[in-house]
Length: 192
Image: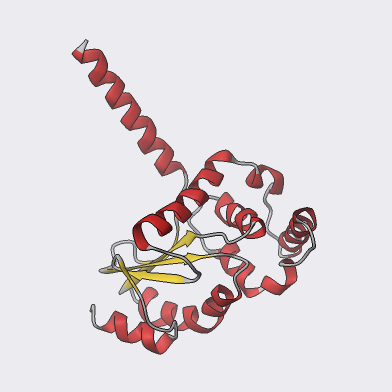
């Protein structure tokens, strides 16, 4: 009996590990960096788009491309349009931030519509016009990706008290200052 329970435990743990490895986190920077930045974001959030436009390029240049830090993008959708966009951004499952960055850079082109059906059509049209070849319906209806996105939101609320976006976590501590590059740079330099 003990052997059966032990084998079931091993099997269950293996299945969980395989499932966890199937969906890759969207990251930029050196995987082994001393500093880990977690960004909880919603793809329909204008402040998140501003972060990608005004803060992220300098952060990438000075800290991510140099190997000092890495950033992990976590999903914290604030509405159904953001939820679907998060699933699409995660869908290629290559850990690459290209779709995510394009969605933020061009937010005004796709974040519109008086219904979720209209918003989805605008998102599909945008992705096609940008040359991203993904099966939209398959991405949006993928239960594993959906759970992955929702678990990010649960983790943010439970472990970091995230209540708005963007919320930045640096080495597991919530960044409490105004999210400007100057403030972020000061906080990061203290950790080098």
